[in-house]
Image (cartoon, rainbow, N blue to C red):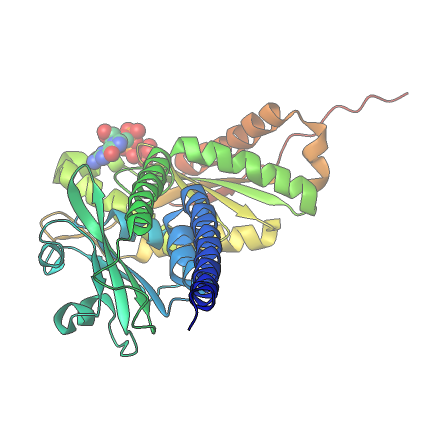
Length: 373
Ligand SMILES: Nc1nc2c(ncn2[C@@H]2O[C@H](COP(=O)(O)OP(=O)(O)OP(=O)(O)O)[C@@H](O)[C@H]2O)c(=O)[nH]1
């Protein structure tokens, strides 16, 4: 072969190599761009449920993986609490919450990610019941140098993750996922705790006020009535005095649970003050409200409550309610309507207390003076 022919051949070969490398560079750029966009999506998730859903399905499909599983250390059950309070969250096998670290620290002895063929022992935890994983990347999720979990990426392609390549971009992904997890969990827990009564776990008065405004606006929009109820446990001071505060607290929790269990998911229950609860029943007329409220009163009256020492205890409660008719909402300023509703329910409750307790009374909103002519 002449020298020129050999050089031409070598030139063609180099061109082919250059072509392949250009394609690879273009693919890598696309992958990095997609990962960059995915990281922005991850950081913009506003709840743990949304983050889990995104990672374990949309992200998995977008990066042509056959599994994206998330294992989280959740010793204080904060992640569980976030998921439990999300009504649309569908439990998935792709998320595991561990109360104790168990096998997790052994998976990351140097806190470094693992890439390659899945190990049989760890596979059973990272990819339970998934036998088609040919290669995987197991990413340690870290916050403040503590291991908080693992993101397991599984592929059917044996070459997708190998021990010889470096995967700086997925280490970066792990850092972003860890940050997003921490943000979502702390934001949700903070929001929940600032709206929840610590003793009874129902909404607190602050959250009730927000919900009352929401319901009045909804009442105006949907042309449906709104019922506002106040409930006060009878002779509660005696319960505390005779059986102690632990019993008092136990009764408050039990009454809250009983009320919550008896209401529809669209109703609102809140602890309004010491031994007083407030309820909103949207879309209810007078007759239906009276039936519901009387039902609650009778349930409390017939419930077998127990003291802290487990002695049976009879508890009753007094009820007062008022009706906010949709057609009358516009007669009031919002703050005036809120005040009037609560005052009316309170006056009805006062009548129940002063006529002997363990009863229900109603007070309608006052008529408004009409300007004629
Ligand atoms: N155990 C416990 N007691 C509470 C709590 N909050 C308020 N209380 C008590 O609830 C009692 C309310 O007493 P009162 O307002 O006199 O009312 P009552 O004894 O229920 O009487 P009537 O409402 O008139 O039937 C007080 O003794 C408070 O100390 C709480 O979180 N836990």
